[in-house]
Length: 521
Image (cartoon, rainbow, N blue to C red; front, side, top):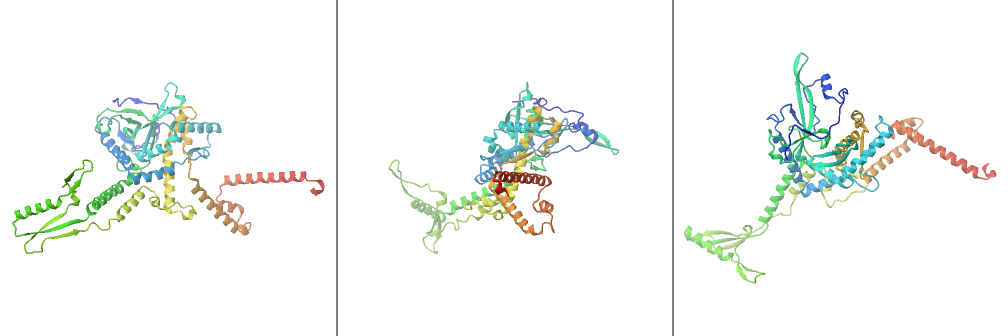
């Protein structure tokens, strides 16, 4: 399927040229630069006019990045890597009956009304339904983690774009690539002629053919608008080649070493496990040719084995021995010791696996998974948080980073949905996008255990400082520095305390009014 690379497919949001936040051209006029912006998202930067020439080596770069994706996918089939990936995904995407996997938090957004917030929350539910996240959340996150990127085509009704996104179709990362086209112009900056940036165009190139067949001068592919694609990279970039790499990249070398050592162990054990016989044959004073013939006759005589065939009931000679079970035949000249048969011992210490276990631990370190999870005999510790290892804490923080990077996909889809339906303009979205928070569901036990211990320590500290409150420490100081409360939390707690105090007074007055007059005294 071939398309003209100059045609643009898909929708694009309109941008007001008078808005400096949305116009790259106007911004470059006021703040010229000779370096194009780079978000380190794996985009290929090309100069204007060089896309269909040898200036941009599209085939080589595209093919190498695809080979990485293929290698990541083959790595994920290895048992140890698959176990580590399952641990990471199970910690990142948590489903339970009480809460949804991902919730949108707009508490920090103060520039829009509550009505607009409710509409945004409703559209976020629609986005998760389009992704079918309640059923395919694990698969989507796994695909993003292994490939290092994920692409979705946002399908809309061209006659009614105000309906928003009607379907999300996943795209194979090996068939699409983001391109940033830069056009330069010469400007006089500080009395020096400088090639400044005139304009920047970003788009995607999609091909449904074999990526390895794409040549730098070919026009096979489709040019797709930036807004038609939802893209979320891993956030890891090879700064030498500017390629997006996956989280499995660090594990390539440890995994190759583990495969090699396992193959070497198997070969060594198969070849050295059996015992062999060594025949020292006295050939007397026979010449070399006669001695060799005599040795072959003896070898054929003692190698004969009678084999019983269960299918036919026949007995036959079988000389097809495995090479690792072959005996050794060594001739001896006249005057040395006579004919002798000895046994060559098999390999020793075949049960030692220190090398394999070392590389397994190294592989888990490369994947940022605690080594304790590799040991099947290690039970889960349900004690205090002080007993939780440091590796588990580091793993917890790594999961938080993964969630933050993956949320770029949800943020991009929510942006497109809100703008298409007219809930927000592009400039409004730019103002609130930094304040939008995605709350991922977490394993409740570890968090509850940690919060309870922190609260216990704070309460114990309050008991110690109770005799010094009002003399050496003020209540406000204890709230801010010991309990670590913010001004908003202090105001909310004071308001709640006052409401509860009023309720208690009202309950006491009602109880007193219900008593007989003589008891009210």
